[in-house]
Length: 549
Image (spheres, one colour):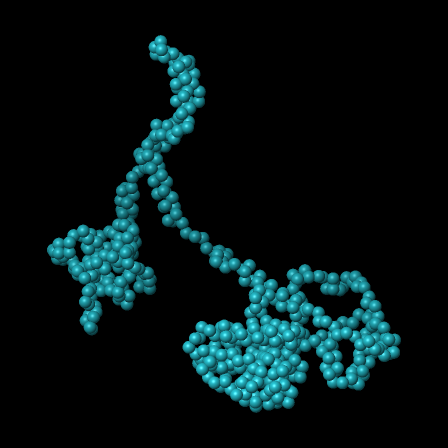
């Protein structure tokens, strides 16, 4: 019985590929009722394959393809010469394969070549019909197989069991022996038999000792193989929601654990205690009179258990379980500042708080009489600012680096023009946070801006690099009176240009590190852009060691 599958079913192989697969693997191809059957699928004999006839499809001619019957007839008569093969094909009314296609077509069908130019991948494919095996076919197929269980296998098993249950010769006795002649006594016969048994244990067992021949053993093995193959063919892998979620090619220990280690290392690096400045030797009498109270030991309180919990909740990471992002801006979140919270003051520390307020009032009075530089230093001691470095780039789009491609250049180390980024639909951001990946799976953040006017006074200490455009008006409104010489003495300057373009005259006389890119040798972009980070690391190690890099 033959039934046609639905049109929506997509079959992965063509008739040409099926013919090649069955011919290479020496599988049986069945021809029945005008159909060619390949396993569970069948096609009509006259169905066209996607192998072009020689000369068709050229110069606007119509494409002609060989039929499936034509290919199978060629495989059956491959031993014949081509003239004899053509005459037999004409006698049976089957189209013959042309001589220019014969060699290449046989090479493909025999598996010698993987493909050929005459195979048209855009040819329309005929949907196969699925063959449903009837009960008569199953009985006929079962009848063709040898019945090992009833004949050979059963007899071989009985012989093997009888041989294994039979007693073995372990020792030689003279009770059932009699002398053959005067020269061959019973003792001599027993010695010869013992010697034969000793040699028999040292040699390989033969067919006489096993009790059956090779055909019987092969019958048992073939029967077991057939039974096992039928069981395996009916097996289906049991899949549920648990087995689907089990990943076989993903190792989370290399990805998730490395990410957690980098976060932990970043937190430990950001919480390193800074060196306190040396205290002034001269103290006023008022400072000598004010003494700080000694810290009191922590007293157990059943309603304040949070203070006695160690690192069990956070697994060693510095996570503030009571923290919140309420009332914080994006800048404060990315730079690591915390929202102001009013701490709960215990009754036992009221006297200490009063003393600290008096000390702060004295410090404010003393700071008002000191120079501005000292006031800035004291403010840095009181309030801890961000340690994220800042990089300033030009605000115009005529330079090689802009807010569109700054992340590609500094983070991904590859150059993409501003026009390409605009064509991709990228939007311009006011500021960018570049994540630089360092050795050991650690990342460091760098803030990139193009509008220095929004920087606060304390933010200029974190400016580590500036990309120079060329004209001096780029630094209008900057600190240090906008003098490029004074600016470059405190901030490392860089200039990005094409290697074939001339160097700007102002850049040539300033202390600027020039990075050149090539329009033709684009594979050198990564090496050239890595020089930016190498020069910047050396500058920050010498001049900005308090920042995170």
